[in-house]
Structures are given as C-alpha cells and as structure tokens.
Length: 167
Image 1 (cartoon, rainbow, N blue to C red):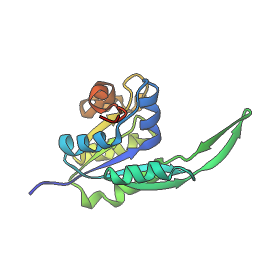
Image 2: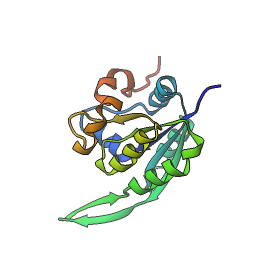
Image 3: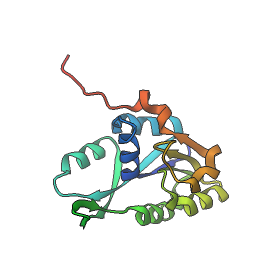
Image 4: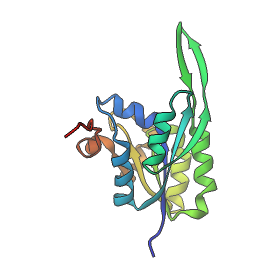
C-alpha cells in the first residue's frame, strides 16, 4: 500500500522566487514531479483570489491541484497599487487540518513564517521535503532544515514552462 503524501504550496512565494530567477514554472510538470519524486497524491495551492484570473485557476485545477483561496485587498502604498493576499495562516491551518490524512508533507516556500510548521513536522517525522523556490533568496530561519531541502534552482531545466507551439 502506498502512503499518501500531500504538498502545501505557497503560490506567491513560489511564483516570485521562480520569476526572480528569470523563468516560468510549468505547473503541469511540477505536479507530475511532486507525484513521481515525493508520492504526492494531493497538492494544495494557496493563492489569493483575483477576479479575472479564472483561466489560471482552471489550468491549475486541470493540472491536479486543489486551490485554497485567500481574499485579496488592493493596497495603495507610496503611490503604487498592488494586491495583497497573504496565505501563510491558511497554509499552516490546512497542513494541520489534513495532518491525519497524509503520511508526510511537502512544503513549498522559502518564507520564514513557516519555521514553526516545518519544525513541528520534522519533530513528528511528518516532513517529506521542504522545497525552496530560490536558494539565493529565502529566509535564514529555514536554513537549519537544509538536510530536508530541495532548491528549485536545480530544477529549472526540468520544470521550466516552454510555450507549446503548433507542430
């Protein structure tokens, strides 16, 4: 009997970490990678809900992700407008709600706000892997978990989005 592992993905941290390296993630390939490498049967994506992004949400669902939405706010700061939708609390909460349902968790984020969650999962032998989007830009709080960490910088060739042309 295979043991189910679940992934909990901080979409904003993942997106920005990959973007800052100059590439785009192929979400479909990433889902296959999570399944093949870590036996992830359920992959939760924590994402701010922005009207008009329905195509993105549909694509993520069709690739096999379960979306957990956070309402977003329009923030005006220093003359700039931006969307804010911090998903940290939702990711921690759902990781704990699902705790009895998975063998081990894969956490995808480089955000130090997850230090307490990762610490707890390691103590309970429930952390399969911490996947950090950018080895150059992640919280020093997570560095103590280097033996459990995979850096996506190394996965660029495998997981980069390539436009699908007409052949």
